[in-house]
Image 1 (tube, rainbow, N blue to C red):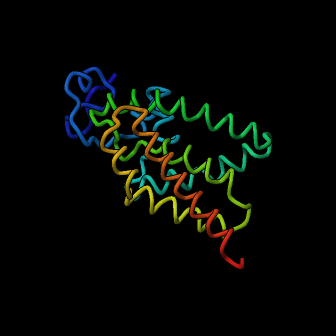
Image 2: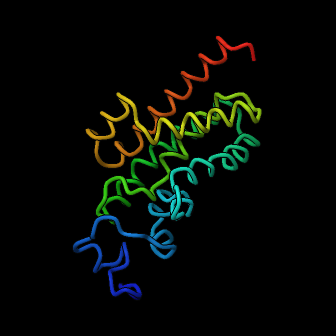
Length: 184
């Protein structure tokens, strides 16, 4: 098995990389498919996008939600999202350690799970879902307080997952206010 890439740098997740993993590695498909935790944390590969991996992860939630909602009712979806959150704590912790970065930008499972929660409570039409997408991305990118506080204070897999859960909560609060006060 090859443990170094074309630039003679250790491949993330290889034994030589686990000795002293440099920060800000650019993982590849081989890294993502090497361990189930990496595959999950990178959203099945959505996190490999060089441009806006968090946005790609959020977009990946749409087809996943569509598939899940074909087979599960609201309670089943909520339970499944809760299970995905717990799995994400593990997957992001393992993958963050392998990458030497507790919240690597390519780890997008947190966006996927949090946006699944948003979609569960968002009306099923294009305008509502587009607005939800925009709000969620804004909260996730700019991290207003207290999201920023928890993003900085909480480390490991739980920290990675929790700040996006807060971004989802802020998104849902804005959507509820829009529904309550708008004529639409």
